[in-house]
Image (cartoon, rainbow, N blue to C red):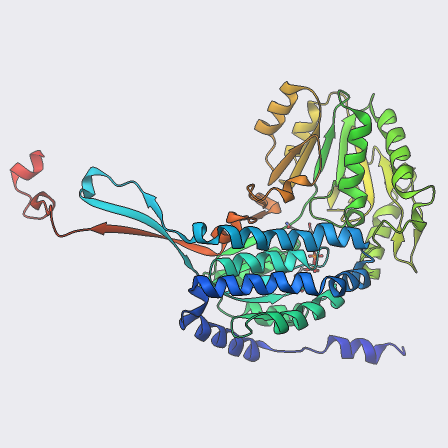
Length: 472
Ligand code: NAD
């Protein structure tokens, strides 16, 4: 076809393993000079990021619009403001975070003192994804810098405008001898993964998470894996229905049209309550996005035609296509799918087997809301679990019995904004965490240091082990 040469051109590998090896060498050399370790360097880079975000806000919004039709307001709140506040917090707290932490000692080492010293790891790799292509790229980089590392960012090729902007902006605002962007897709990422890094921070799917961890294992490189999964929202009948529905809509469609790792993937409610809930959701969607949500400017499009086809096949699965109770409209040309709700889809349908990552929302019904806990626990551990209820006993039971990366009771998504909470998954949804001080910790080694003096050198610890010594 006429398009073929262009596509092949686009797929040309931009760098290979040899070039990647050179880059790692260069970064390690920079790291070994010790410059990235200094407080001043870390501050200068954080200030560079702050400046970049303030001065180039318009360019960033434009790139996000090109990649995802992300509404400007959403781009500001969920990408730009998130990065800004991470920078501000890091700049304010950095001195404190860098301070060695005193630790208790025991009689066996008396007299002594001990402390935990946070030291940078070296050259680290951040591989990021396309759904929040700006903040999910820059936030881990902020963590790497605050901890004093040299860092390479590999943004997602699926958000090409943001990837290329990041590459330009990093050159302009940051110290290229220790902070770099390398663009590329699978081939380039593979070349980077062949190298020995001191840490790899990956955001993306569990499938690629496995590839990353396998590559890292060859070099004994530790990893943070920020993965996805199916985030459930349990909705009890004892709720403020209007508030619940707004927050569900915010946590599904307002959030990048469902293309978010913490968006509500499916709802569990009781058979009895489902009709009332669906009615309220239908009204809420109309209130937010108008009578024809396909025309709304306040909703992102689907990122690519590949993802559009994937979502279409989830909708057209013979097990679910007649279960649609709200929405269902789609437009391939505009890459738009309306908020779509399905009722009582079978557990073995694709819709319930894989992470949806789009505007489709299945509702599963149970006899008793308590049954939802077993249902969630029978599946891989989610990144976030949501519960809406006024029932204290149910809340406690949910928090105690459901295992997930994080949890929000009576709201969706807001936990990502609380930087004193670690953000990360468990089991299939990932390992390790970040945000706030947790980002600093994710990119630091906690070195145990024991200080002794030459006094108090008790001879009991040394041979020969005389009977007198053994009595002690
Ligand atoms: P993606 O396709 O952009 O892939 C992510 C990164 O992996 C990209 O940089 C890409 O170049 C690289 N990659 C892809 N295939 C590879 C391969 N074979 N070898 C090496 N590298 C490869 O994004 P995605 O995977 O579609 O992202 C969606 C997933 O990310 C969802 O599962 C979502 O839940 C998860 N996610 C998690 C978080 C989080 O913070 N936990 C945030 C956003 C997205």
